[in-house]
Amino acid sequence: MESVAQQIEKLRFLRRLDVSETLFADVSPHVLVRYRERAATESPSHFRAQAVPVRLTLLAAFCVTRMAELTDALVTHLIDMVHHINVRAERRVEKKFVAAFRKVNHRAFVIIRL
Image (cartoon, rainbow, N blue to C red):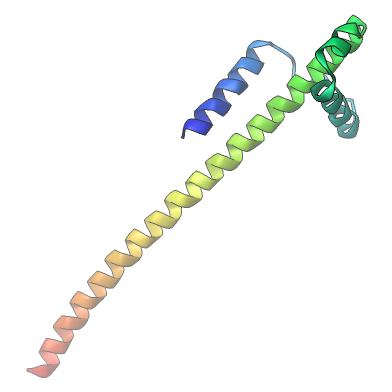
């Protein structure tokens, strides 16, 4: 749960930057990934040396793709949690069913024995 809280906090931070997720709607996902990789791997000194439009484009691409990654990770985690809850519930129901069956089966055995 702690990692989920950390991911939620990261996502909230990025959303506070108010970068529109539709900003790169007409840009190829491949190009967007390349922008993100460039922004993530470029040294701070080289990053600062970029022209302002290039720097802002790279930062926006990084933020948009990172928000999508965090959202996907949270959805995956939610699906895993629901699956885990479902498995536990199935086990609980199976145990109750088996216990009820044994109880009925035991009574039937006692009646036949008499």
